[in-house]
Image (tube, rainbow, N blue to C red):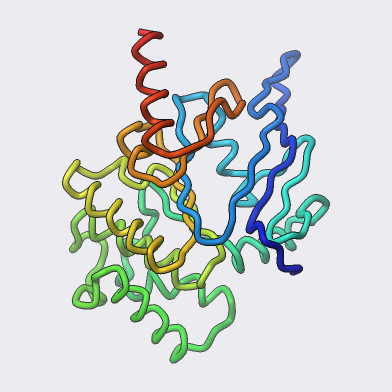
Length: 245
């Protein structure tokens, strides 16, 4: 793909869904740019459009109109196979529910994306070990998910997302199923990854999480209503929620 100063760029992106005779406007004229090495939170209440936006960023959905450029190339018009290949090459996903295979070890879970790439056993095992060590689980590689704590399972999921060396790490409510102390540990891990040069986009409904990110975008009714320092945007969201209640 063609290199660009912007890692990703959305220009006037809309997403509409037909529900019977009604049209749902999930995203309305959304535009923003992310450069390599940024750590961005997308924050908003339920129904604000942040999940739809995440799906478009992760190439799991396509805009109804507007343009999405990834590393300078317009993804519009790519068929499902091309989108799947691009997603596997460029994007790592971290989910709230971990989505680990219960009967396989941490090492085997992390290897899985490399299996889909056709990478040989020796190389993928080396890369999976390195990814697990990077998230502090060098001594838990042979453990299965039911032998790990919630925080450790999330670290395995993060290692699995990192093992392909993606351009972007997308995290969907990654602390949502964790207690507050473990959530802080996972957020610190994201800060460590950011410090190491990774580009991260984190979706959350919690102002306290967004406040700890260098940049945050606040969504409401499918639109971007604020884009700035995480602490400032989180304060706006907290105030808006207080006024609404």
